[in-house]
Amino acid sequence: MMDICKTCDGNNFIKKGGAVVACPDCCDRKLSLREDVLTDAIDLIIGDREDEHGNPVDNFRRIATGWSALFGVEIAPHQVGLAMVWLKMSRIIHKPSKDSFVDIAGYAALSAELADNEK
Image (cartoon, rainbow, N blue to C red; front, side, top):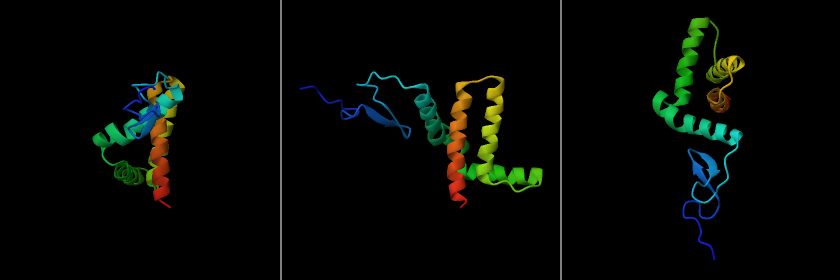
């Protein structure tokens, strides 16, 4: 009988930063690029970026307030994320990079959450 991995309890997957990833101790499966991008995005919006920039709901509300005053039109917090997606898309048009795709995934997820909160 084989020993069961203590890290994943034999499931071959673990939670990392809110994402489900292959267990590093027992699974030699390499993440696909799409899994890697999404896992990186989850790690950023739940961990590092939130620690650095604060709660995204509060942050996007502050930005929306500032942009509304600056542009003279009402900007909703979820639209801040959409504008940031466009910024990243513009950069990708010039030069594709994994980091920009990761950021797009993160901004899209945050925008979805904010749009849901605005209902």
